[in-house]
Length: 413
Image (tube, rainbow, N blue to C red; front, side):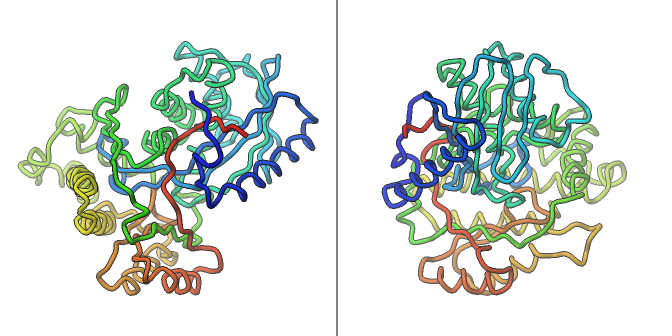
């Protein structure tokens, strides 16, 4: 794995601020672990899903990108079999990796993710070992930028570079990260979050074969589009929403199971429409609608990628809006039916639509139900967009992002 400079990752304009951030992280490392002569620096980005909302877990297609917000680590290799990670604002995790079993009482913790990544490395024939690390993150938790995936990819990138000469591919790192989250952490996530964080840049990912997903980079210079990518934190709480998230893949898979298959990708929209009465009877209307969203969303991803490749940004924006509309009406992941009084995403989408007034695009961002919306805002309206969104949701809730050129990486510092 190549070393990347601060300028490679963050751009010339942000280089000095990032150097100060890394220096501060090093000082915190020393405060927690003492000085180490051979520290190394790592970074893994948050991700933005641009198209393909809730398609990955049924082997669908997504358009995604790594973003400028990331989790960084100052790392010192050790001779023992203990991984110690102190993350800013959280207690220190100490994981003995001589035991890679799933520990029930450890589920839903960062220790479970660390152990799970180490376990995934061993199961895939890679080497592991101990290290001490201090991490700090500006990836917003509960933002749909996937802070957990960034953390998993960070741990995998560290193990790859420290013990495997950087030979573990971004794709394999993402698959191991998903394994850690599914099996050890106990969350039934798809692979898109980890893949976008691990690979970075604008990419389409086709998960038809999850062992060998097809990844394609999109050669598009977003900085010259005349638009900005905004993520608005509507301050929704993801707590107790795991059943809502879990119901989406389960309902989609129930439709596939009606046709003797495991995933919707193994059947067609025509199969469903020809047997629509049976699907309604056996699976229910919401499962049917979510399945139809899946099929249409796969097509939208192809159209979005094609529009970017041809430089037709308006056609791209039209598809982003269509994705948001389908997520609202058919996927139904904008608010939780168990908490109807809390509809920050709906409010954010209404406000975005009012401000954009037919320009740009807006949609739910990430898993949904709470958290963030995504908007492509004309630069001429950016200042107004930020002011009005923060008037609703509070100061520093509207974040203007850039697209990151690489995924998980070791930083030359």
